[in-house]
Length: 101
Image (cartoon, rainbow, N blue to C red; front, top):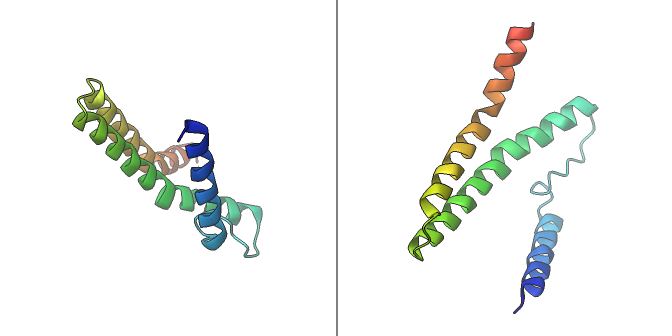
């Protein structure tokens, strides 16, 4: 299978998953203002997408390490640091907002 076919199958699988699980697509159909919708999307990104991307990145780096790739250790460190920063982002934002008020 070539890369284009793998990409198309992956995109189709993601599309089907989002149709049957709209909360994974961050599709909120409830009423409310713009601010509440933005807050819902932000919470969805922080609570689901960020941890999922972190786990996928660590698994990818572990596979690279198992195959003997020399840059796997650097990738693991990079994924760990970016995951930590991403998960601390809401606290950092609230801290900066508190300083401004």
